[in-house]
Length: 551
Image (cartoon, rainbow, N blue to C red):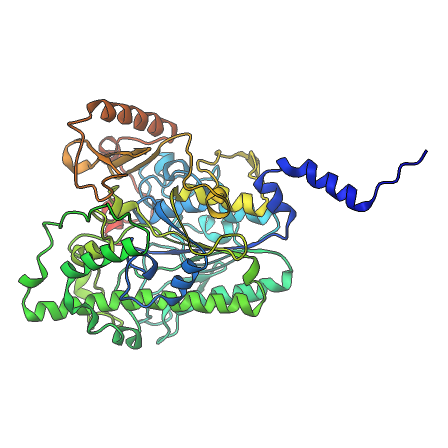
């Protein structure tokens, strides 16, 4: 006897059997989404509207946050090159070969460029059928065989090093903005603004890739608002009177705004005032005018990045790709501290903001940029390693979502691979690959999870500064403090005002042991031992410190 089974019954049976499918399988069965990662440079935790900077015009970021998700806690590696190494590979920076910076300190973990064992996002996603695009700052390999096109990117425009002018002020034979497009040098025409060129090339790459009928991955790595402070006059004009209230008042406003925006809990306190920053009301009138202009230029640079994101959104809509594209926005570290002294500051020939100006943002305004968090770029305090995180993906991410997260840049690679249905290979071109260190953020982005449930603590090391976070506890040791350990309860004191190390020596000992285990696993070497043996490759600066000062 024949048994007739309807098509609807077959479909129902298949669906029933597929209830246990993983998130990655369900995404892989759908049309593969486009993925855009926007990374900005030296942007503080509260330097955008969604995180507290209501005085800076960021309407596009505001809309992405309103229509998507924000994380309260998302971490980076505190400084440019190490962060980019982790972003691109899903590894802790030492495991990827960039433990210190893009300089060679004589060991594989500190070679200063991405190793072959750590696959880039572009290499993995291209194997999964993606067109891979990059526009902006590279900073994880100076030699040509280490450039983006040699590490999986189909298209690249940008600069290879750690910093660049925004305007060209020299001739084509000796450019001050050394750009590359697909391995060939490119000259920035005088009058052109680099942020625009980075954006326009990204838009052109997207348009060209549309002909391939494949999904694309775009890594859009703006160098703004990294020094030198240079912006378009029309953008600066918007902010010429905004910052006359001063950094002391604005840092408190940003703190209150961050609470209202839901990215800082109402019971959290603002970090203690930086004692090295002079109170605003102690400045002379002329000093206040000078510093107001500096911050106006910094705000203008952020404003123009937001305008560029608006152009990107317009291109997606034009190509009817906006409904199937994930956009993630982050920063590589907190705002820059220090006094802004540069070995070539005498080259400044113009007013701050104009071509020929080489001014930087200093601790005074950076304290505001990182508000309410402590300290600055290059340190493992929250102000150095905390970034805004905004994710937008229509119909996949619920609008207006705010979650704790406690994500890390090592989590981006597994997130993108799961979303794309991409397999991370055990070997690649005959080389055994490093296992991914992070965890997918998709349960946060598209599910009900409030934070990542980690199997291991998060840890940081860079230039002798180190930290580890396990649950609510965070242990910090700054290299210049003679090995002293500080302990903070981040759930109650994210501003790191209250050192609890003396009250909880047992927790300090536990975290020190966990840090030692992490360091061994990731080939971390005591910087005090490594530094005297530092070596450099031909053509590199004479010392690692010299290179860092320029980046």
